[in-house]
Structures are given as C-alpha cells and as structure tokens.
Image (cartoon, rainbow, N blue to C red; front, side, top):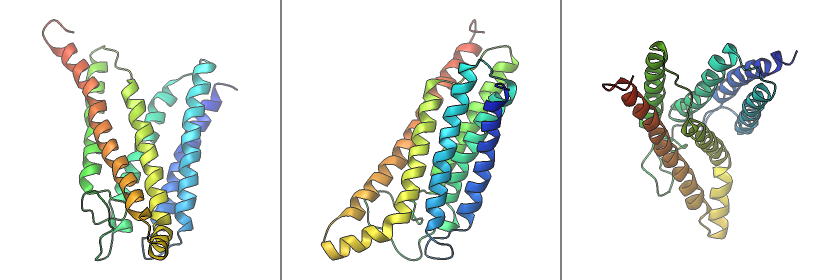
Length: 222
C-alpha cells in the first residue's frame, strides 16, 4: 500500500497541473475572466508544490522510489514551470497600449515575462535532458543536482509572486492614487527581481551538468 501513495501524489500533481492551466486559460488581463481565477490558480499551485514535497519525502522515508516517480515527477515539474511562463508571456496577459511603471525591462505583458525568458528556461531543460540521456545511455550515473532543486524553488516562488502581483495590481494602483504612495513601483521591483533571479539561477543551474558532461567525455574522463 505504501508503495502506491507517492505515485498517487505524483499523479494528483499531474491532474492539478491540468486544472491549473485550464483555470489560467479562462483568465485574460483586462478582458474576460474574474480575478478570482488567479486566486484559484495560486491555491492550486501551492497544493501542487506541497504534493511535490510530500511524495518525494514519503518515497525516501519508505524507500519506495520507483521508475514511475523518477520519470513522471520531474516531467510534471517541468510542465508546471514551463507552462506557467509560457502563459505569462502569452496573449492572456498582454497589456493594451500601456506600460506599467517599474524598474524592469519593457514588457508588453502585465506579468513582466517576455518570450526570451521562456526560451532560456526551455533551452536549459532541453540541454540538461539531452546530456543526461546521453550520459546515462553510456552507462554513467547522472542524477539531479542540488542546483536543480534550488532552481525549481526559485521558479515556483516567482510564479506565485507574478500571480499575486497581477491579481492585486489594480488594488495597489488605487491605493497609490489616493494615498500618494509607491506600492506599484516596489511590487513591480519585487516582480522583476524574481524574474531576473529566475533567469540567472536557471542558467547557472545548467553549468554543473555541463561540467560533469565535459569531465565524462574528455580523453580519459569516461
């Protein structure tokens, strides 16, 4: 019975990912869909993160880690993260002929995510998957690094920050207007710091895998 619980949690997270994207698809900034869709998406993502932690913890505690978890667990992680940033850079969050004040780069999305950010993240995942597959096919162990886990945490925090930012931006704008404060500026700064940190951590997290691959395939290394 115990051996099935971590796999069931992984399957639940895959289902949550589907629901998460369905909810996001119903929302459009300054268009269709209630802001409550973002609250629901936020809650679903938090639950998905909890199940990610729980299934890994239980699998290690009960020593029931299997092929299903090794394959599906990172797959769901990538779907959640890459899918979120694809949505954030897409038409559902486009700003119509306006710019949100803030210290970050110019983006045509209220999320602050530009397509280049998504491309960098996708390229990293494709690169690591390719070199890991080649190494393991050659008989070399190529497990996940701690940097990869840190990357997932940073990316997930950024996703939650962006969801909250977009949802409560009208409230921040109204408060700034009536109280002459700069909440929009500082929350936009936080959003942009999270995005840039995600980009940097994503790139840096790939360096360890590249270094290991070079060590394996250089003369005398394999």
